[in-house]
Length: 116
Image (cartoon, rainbow, N blue to C red; front, side):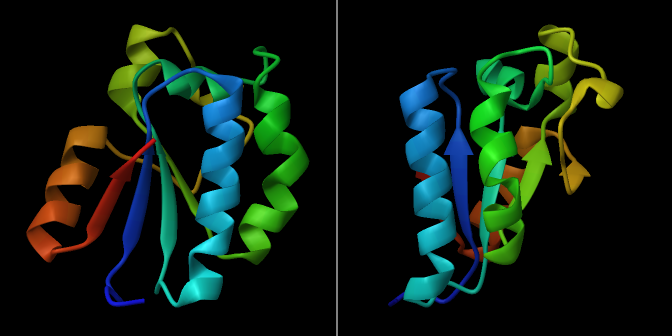
């Protein structure tokens, strides 16, 4: 890959197809030379990490593969508060960081940022 900086995949749509496609892309990027791939759950997409939401099965079923590929999962606490998702409701996360901060730091570092 031309860009060997970190690659962040942002998910802002709470759509099963987009969430599924994002996980596939996130797992494939390290195989194509990206240093890392991170799924940032912002906006309504935070519900896909909520174990009470049926869409969380998409992540649950792929969690071992995501971990094996080295994909990091970040949950946005602003989205969590807005959509009433508690920390203990999350099926998995590597970190909880405000999405705006993650995006700003990625831009500052020159990392590639994809919105799906």
